[in-house]
Image (cartoon, rainbow over all chains, first blue to last red; front, side, top):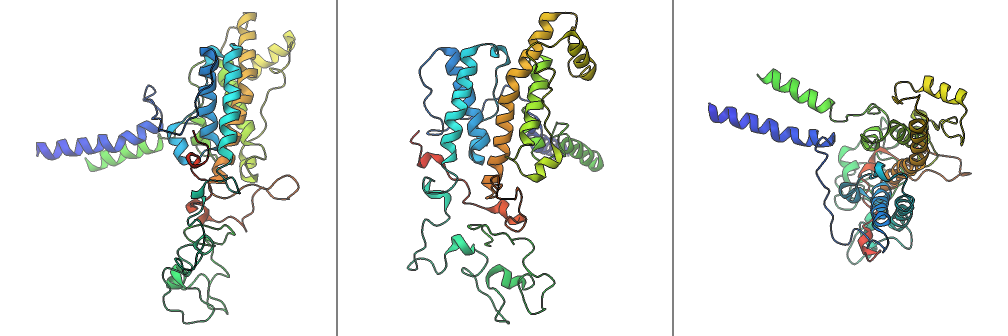
Length: 186
Length: 173
């Protein structure tokens, strides 16, 4: 019985830790930095470099993806608010890092992994999954009793995209966006 | 016993946001970084800057329903008169818990407010925009006529995988 009680207590403590961490009650804990995720800090006075590092972290958090939001946080040393070098470094670092992160959004300068598949090649893929996703045709195409019914997950459900009066909804109410490259398609 | 454990977990769950903005979009995410140290003017300036940033078009119309422009024009004045200071004292009696008879302390708090406002404004507005971009839901540019288009962006956008890539491929950091 003592062992069971101990295990229950331990389980409660372990499950509570993420909730406590979200309040940042453990304020002294530092965030990990992974290789190649932080640019080299330019030369300058210690105040400037500290400001630059803080500003860059702010920029990576705000315009980065979720990965950067786990390794950065908002930083502003209130004791240095009147230090012009710190503030200059803060603004410079923010601008540099945030604008470098912009390039990963989309377009010609984006990184290769902005696409689920770097390119559609019919030798390897039956469908262009950037457009269809994994659940609208492609990987699984179950029965299609009506010509207008889509395959894939929608076909399995059989209610979202049926036409000619067979469906409650006119279109898929959950995935009805025009966005591409989703797991659930367009 | 089970009941007590359940109540305890529920309390911990509901207190995990730890911010008065928990019910607003991005409220828990950005306002958890509201400074806990610094002068009262610094903290108020951060809060006003962040809320003003979330109320810009960098977010979308959904954000603009919850947030609004909040920079105090009297605190922002270069040389507020004694009457202005008195009005500010009455307006922010709770937030600016300072010695209003000490001109230097008043000046310091007003200065901190002005210095941090745009820093937090930029941080919060870009966080809102970055979150939308990660879901492939870029708000329209001025003139395009929309800030949030439910016909284009669906609930499934949260599973979007290609909206933001890994900069390590490109930046050579």
